[in-house]
Length: 554
Image (cartoon, rainbow, N blue to C red; front, side, top):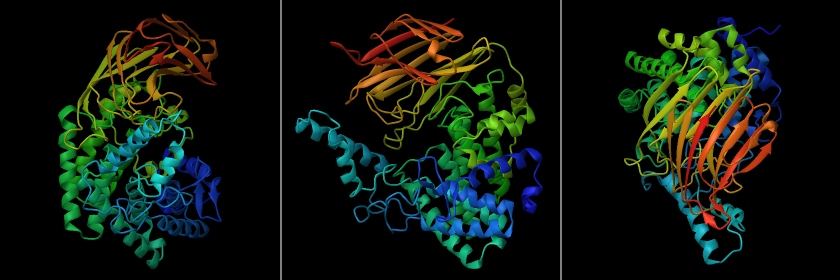
């Protein structure tokens, strides 16, 4: 029987379950030769390796500690240290990732939004090149152009991920807080040097807004500025964190919402980091602000949560999946909040390594929110406004007030978003979730994409307004872009092979949708447990730059 460290063994059984489950999964993916964990993409994963090092220290045997030390050294090797570059202080996502180019840009010369503007500009350069060269296909040399650009310009998300500074710095904070005495003095000194670089460059990014920070990254940034500011007696970091925390709370209070709204993907990160604020905050004010934000976020979740469907209703701002058990830690957090009856929500997904952090901090849920999470409330509306963050737009002009409206019943919940100007494909403006007669779960979301490409991209020229009524969504889509576009209603569930789709009626498992549409004839694409109802902007001899749908859920 494995003997865990004193810290781990003092935790409650539900938290120990999460730790053991995460470690069992990570153990199978550990590469002893590389001292790193294999990731989902066939490459080693720096962030998950840092989490695994924490888990090994929590397990605590001499062999585990030695392995953890080797992994920490390997993660430290992943830090990018080229002084003055936009990516200085962050970490390579994996050792297989090529280091970004250097020598073409320098800190202090970037305008706000530079990191995104550069990428968009290069994409536009290629589009115009293809047009002027009269290439038969716009994508003919796109890959080669991208490779050439990445050898000269450090493009955010393409050649580096700026957010790995914050993710690794948070995990190292937890390691140093709990296990500094189990690491060598030399290794701790290396970690401190790396963290000084990471936090100082995170601060430069935050102040310059060269790459604007979404909510989850802002929470991590403020935490590491606060935590390491106290560790290294950096008064300016501490003051910055206190001011930033108060400003974030004021911004949250205005509409009772974060910019990353109703996102199971990022709410899971938010609550994990707010647990760090609550447990490791060095000042009463910082801890109290964190607790207020944590409580408020649980209230936001409860407002859009259906106990019958065990899921959050849309619409979603910056989210990957429709289910809280996919690409999300929300199921894990609900398990800690609601008890053993929700253990089935803790299924393994790409966020499971975060469970090692979540188990240390637990949850703090207000009693009123707990009641909402436990008890189905019948038919109801949920309405929230939030100020989105448009990453690609100029800071100071990139916050727009959006309205999210959901209608929830025990068997069906639908949601719509109005007012967004965001170019991000992770904005899901129209959603539906329902149960069939056997209690099986299904979901639908509206996405847009370049023809044949992923929806998870930034595209300009499109706006969506979705009004929510009882059992009805009214959708207006304006679809103008520099590339061919299609609007897609993406379905997910168990028996989608049974669907029957016509222009005015969608016969789905457990649900009929009557469709009143001003749109082209749809095409249906089925792929295993998913199906797509596709409306092409360029259809036959007509360009549908505007489409309208009135969906009646029967």
